[in-house]
Image (cartoon, rainbow, N blue to C red; front, side):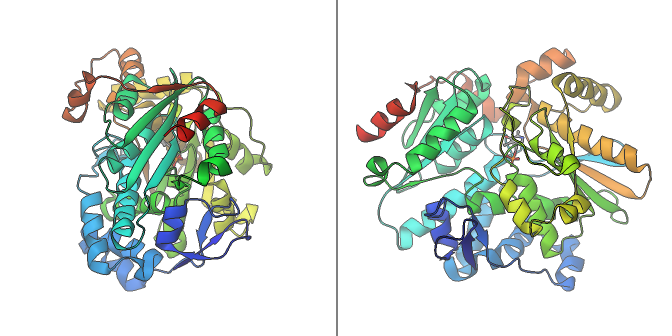
Length: 434
Ligand SMILES: *Cc1c(COP(=O)(O)O)cnc(C)c1O
């Protein structure tokens, strides 16, 4: 498979090159030249395949000869080494829990897959050390830190907004050490993201250090998220009903990966783009005009994004046709009080404990199903973070005490190690002094 830049001013590259570079030289996002189609045989056989077999078949055409098949199989086995439970909430609504990985965030899958692809590239051809530079609004940092921890030939530098990530999230990205460095930025997530963008085009930095991203801009992180949709389809509670999936969205990498699966032919009837009040995409889907506003802090802070980086890929998947996009995706946005109310409702009606992102996802699904008003559909909402990652919000809202799972217990009393950063100049000095 070859990848084009969506700015159409760079040459096409193969999978591993695109993973290593992150963004194309013309600053465009990479996008596959074609979307392969699933065979009817394969789709009918999905219930009989393991998660590993599904994932291998889904992603192999996007990689082609860049990674030998046997190696790709073992990368997938290593990546998907935990469960993806589906928990029924009502007759027509179920939660797909994507948070059972090592950092309790759905981003573990993309980060683990990307790290293992880069480890293979380092082994066989790329000898120079690579620095992963990433901005996080919460969960990316932890998942990337864990996914790349001690990976040969790779250093990781993570920027996060001071005071704007949860305690658990902060511990996950500041306590590993070794090849992982955390920079604590006096500013917002968008400030972090802007600094990362500036560093990538700063020749004084890039002449000495090979930088790449590990945000969902990177095709390995982005495409691996496709696996969730195959798993959702395989394990959906009512196989005779049409499937609708709601995705809690920030940078829209996850939803966009689902849309790739849809274009390949995976039978998903409709997608819900669920957001908090950072509602650029739901607004676009109802008005047709794309107008990013400055991001606002919410209790579902992993989705506090003003200008989602993957939106351009979604447009490309629909050939920039607004009406085609609208047929497949509906957007809903919710305030924090609505999110808390939903958390209470879910908990009191079914004893299920959602995190704030899952609650937004549930609300979008419920909003759509209520409007649809029929019984012929099965809805699955993605639950993207373990509630303990947002413990104070969940405990205050539901008046309960959460037991920390073992992944968390290990890190809570470790010491935070971070470097304070006030502006782009201090980030630049950090790199030049290394
Ligand atoms: C990153 C994240 C999201 C948003 O995912 P995108 O792919 O950026 O849309 C949602 N929920 C949680 C918990 C996250 O960490």
